[in-house]
Image (cartoon, rainbow over all chains, first blue to last red; front, side):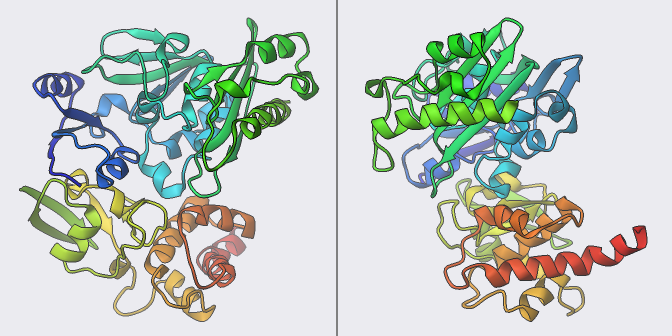
Length: 265
Length: 163
C-alpha cells in the first residue's frame, strides 16, 4: 500500500470541507473494497476521510412503509433488521449474502452504492426498489444515479448520506455467486408495487446495473416465474471474463429472474 | 505517523504506526500478539479475524488508525486464567485443526457466530457462517463438529433450563 494520510471526521460538513481541500482524497466507510484495492496498489488516495464515526450517517428508520437506511449502516445490521424484514425481506436477504460475516460487519450500504461495483449486490436492490439516494446536498432518483461501471451521479466531494425507499408489495433477490469472491456473477432483484414491476440486474451488464423492460412488462401482466422464461437479454450488452461468457450470463439473468420472482411469492 | 490507542484483551495499549499500517500488523508487530495470523492478505481466508467492539472483522482489511479507540479481542484474550475458552476446548477435543494456521481465525469466528445466533445453530448454518474462513487441511468436518459442540456446551444448559 502506498502512503496515505488518515482523517477521522465527526460530521458531514467537516468531511466535505476536508475533501474539498484535497486533490486526491477519498472518502472511506467500511473500507471493504477500498482497503483491498489500496493494498493491491490499484488505488492510491493521498488522504482517507473516514465517515464511519459520523453518528448521523448510521441507523435504520421505518415510518409507515417508508424505509430509510443511513449510509454508514453495515450490511449485518440490514440483514438482521426485524423492522425492514417485516416490510421487505428481500433486501435483508440480499445484505446477508454480501461477502462473509466479517465483511458484513464492516461494509456499508452507502459505500457499496457509491462505489457502484458492477458485481455488487446493493445497486440491483436500489434500482429495482426505485429508491432515492440522499446526499449532503440533494436527492437523486435511482434511475439517474447509476451511470455505468463504478460511475454514479455523485460529484467529487458529495457524500451519500442515506437510501430511502417505499416498501414494495413483493420483492425477491436471487444471486448466482462467484464461488471464490462471492460477488454476483449475476444477481437479479425484482420488486412489485402498485405502479408496476421493476427488474434490475447486477454482475452481468458491461455498463453496470441495468433494468430489463421486457421482463418488467411481462411480470406486470402476470407476476409468475414462467412469465420471464421466454425472455432473453442481448449477450452483446453483457460482461465476459474468465468466470463466465456473455451467453452464460444472459442465461443466468433469466434463471435468476425466475428464482427472484419465485422467492417473493 | 499516527498514534493508535486500543483496548486489547482488556488492557489499554497504545503505539505509533504509519497511517497505512494494517490492524493485523499493528497487533502482531507493535503489540507482539502473534496469535492473529496473516494468511491470504486479500480478505479471503479469515486467519486474521479478531473482534472489534464485539464484532468479528478481518484485521488485514482494516487500518490500525481506523480501529483506534475501539476494543479489540484477539485469540490471546479468550482463555481465562489459563483455562481454555469452550470453543478452544471444543477444537481441541474434536481435533478441529491440523496444521493450525487458520485456527485463531476459526475460533474467533466461532465465538462471534455462537454469540450472534444465541444458541440456535445447526450444521447448515455453521457451514454457511464459515464462508469467510478457509482451512486447507481439515475439510471442515471437524471444525463444524467443534463449533456445534461448543455451542451446545455454552447454550445447552441454558436451553434445558428454559425448557
